[in-house]
Image 1 (tube, helix red, strand yellow):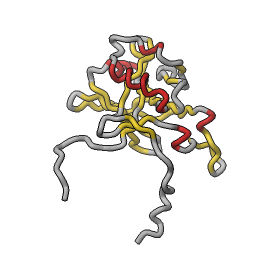
Image 2 (cartoon, helix red, strand yellow; image 1 turned 180 degrees about the horizontal axis):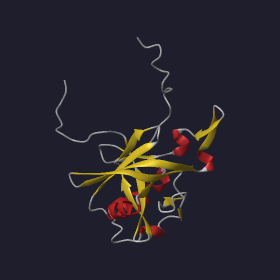
Image 3 (tube, rainbow, N blue to C red; image 1 turned 180 degrees about the vertical axis):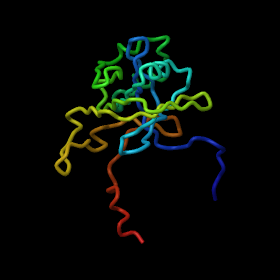
Image 4 (tube, rainbow, N blue to C red; image 1 turned 30 degrees about the vertical axis):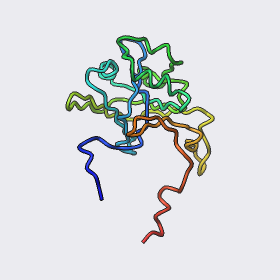
Length: 189
């Protein structure tokens, strides 16, 4: 038996990110769960914010943004960035900021992984600004990088320790691996 819950954007778990943009010449960060992959070649991702969010103006102005993946140890400051607007608080002082190749997408050194993105498309719908960005560079802490098949790759989820959220409005950490992608189903008939 299935129970109807009504129309909702129910995707879970939700990766929590800190979306970075320069606003009025200063780094600002918004906590988002509306972020995802749009393609691999070229590497495209999207972030979705309310059009009225302070960070939205910075992304539109500079045509760049960053996606910073906080670990669970950054839970409180990440939550704070989602509660307080950059209009009311200077979030540039919450983190050690750095810039990469684009020069206008502020990133957070304390986050294990950062994506530096250039806006490819700006879509507006129902009061939301959806920025589709091409990932120009991935920056990762050395402790989160491993050799896999002769190439540098990101480590396992326990090492990355990403902050995730669920429909019950609780934060979680990821668990242990239970299988290998693109191989578990090979013998399934």
